[in-house]
Image (cartoon, helix red, strand yellow):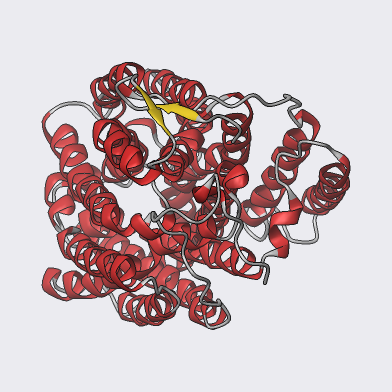
Length: 532
């Protein structure tokens, strides 16, 4: 950064001779707005997840349940690196606020959807805006706070995640039980509006002048390639045979577009995804860890609300309360890990521990069946929360510390991209596993014809608590057993992905975190990370 002065959040010029002090003042002023934006990003999926059984009951199509999540995650995935690069080129504040506005527009459209295909399309649009929320907030924090000091704020980030993951299902459940599921989307408007106003008035970042050349071709190729891969994992062996012309055609499209994407990124002066950052060993490892966390976690947890409401008989509101053990474990470990990283500067051991705990949690959750008590499932989810607390913020910290500050935005977006694309593949793969297992188990109990009608009937299947209560006892029992069995299969398969998390984390090197204390140079916070 070439400037010798920067504006604080109040707009007062501040000499760069005390970057740590200025950053602390700035982050205190804008932190509420950043936390609200992060809350907005995290809140949406968990609110919608709780409302999904009711949405399926209203719009139909239980076989399309995973697509409501997949479309959102896919939109987030393909847009995340674009938002990160736009923030590096045009300024983080303007780009960040644009992503919030786009997300809010998508929320309105989702709330107005009249059919499942409409909802899926609007969720993809909403995801385009959501891709800039988390990466924008993390990039702004990266501008204001050096890596060594970010542990001080990790507990607050974890608190926001806990509030979203617990408050989201509670809000979604309350809305579903006492209002209409459409308000699960409209509820984003007041929170997003407050974040926009606060950031517009209080966020002032150092101005940078950059030659702007957006890699639109690379963005297009990446979007097409990722979409083709997700469609393969969703349709293969389910809607189309693996050897069908449709799947082979999608495979060809994926290979060609992603191959061209690599060529374009190598030659473009401002690539949307600079391949050079993958030369850093720690960054590459933590990107793969993030992918696996997204794949195993988000792919599996998507089906928990359905299990809780259909199998365990919880109301939509109570299904949110049943997530409290998971969030308690997440908050506890995040607070402890954040303080330990700040005090010691060491972080390598935490992803390893988190990966091991996550494997244990997935194995425990795979034991859930139609007779599992809420206490038992709550204990298993608490273990999962403990593992998540070791992984979520630590992986982002390692990614940001692995690059120079000029690449901070694209590093943040790439790390988020890796987790998002893992979630997209996880939801689609586990959605296919869930649907196939559900169909098989229903066929064993009710016959193939009844299974076809229940799982993917032409009129759109409507398996929700209200419909379930009106079914004959034999059919109701079969449905409950089938959903429990399908959910157990999803967690069992997610264990396979989770095993690779600690195996990769072992190879992460302990590289000193950039600290807030001035270094003997004119721009202390821009010191390059040591070459690995």
